[in-house]
Length: 89
Image 1 (spheres, rainbow, N blue to C red):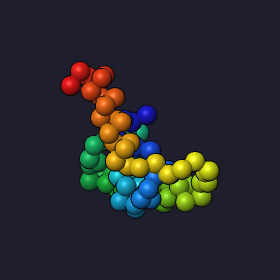
Image 2: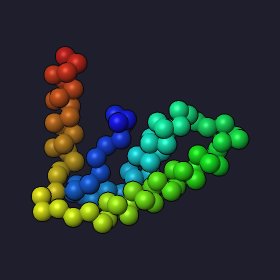
Image 3: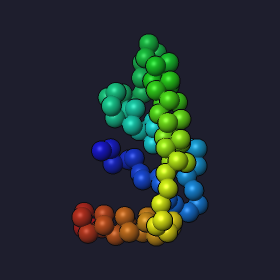
Image 4: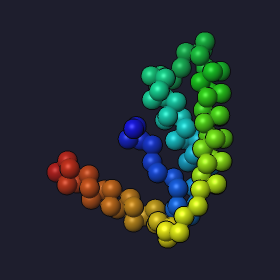
């Protein structure tokens, strides 16, 4: 999985449309192999990002859990600590 795509479900505050769109863009970049598409592929690329963002939003809003919401700041701190251990920073 692309390392830049972050988990978006069950966070407080809830996921924003911008976060869903950014994850969708990263996904399309990963599977297409394009960081920025050519003019010939630009419309298809943008349509794919829009469709994936739409499906992802529907998925995130339909999911249910009994687990408590995670705090974005705490999760970021945990990730930073894991990276420090992994990369020795």
